[in-house]
Length: 162
Image (cartoon, rainbow, N blue to C red):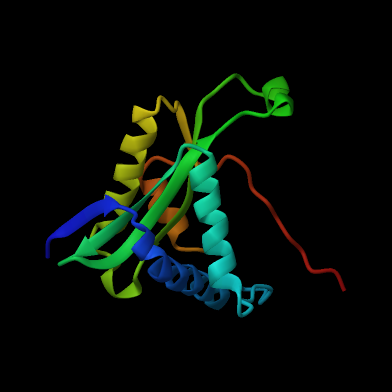
């Protein structure tokens, strides 16, 4: 199985929409509080939001393929520090991994690692000194990211009030 990582092409957009919907469905199934949902326009709206974020922030999207069939993607960009942020943190050039997804049939084959490494290489080449990502606490991907050196920085908590 030869895995290739290539740059995003506009013709990949319909596949990104499908993956964004699959990613949300995956999280919906994991959600212990059953708060998540996916409305009909979810895929196109969140895909466009991701594309805009990447476009406006010196970002990139990479597509993983096997025999030229797309099987996953990673999106990332560089976040500029706000004036408020500079009051509480040392100046930094922060790379953001906004999304990473591998088709369920192709998980556990090292594709996520290859995508994450490719994005890290890109962000390092852009002189980022840190990389940030967020992951839902109950997502098994949390352990995946820890395995590759990411540590918990902030923890959001939620409680249902009755």
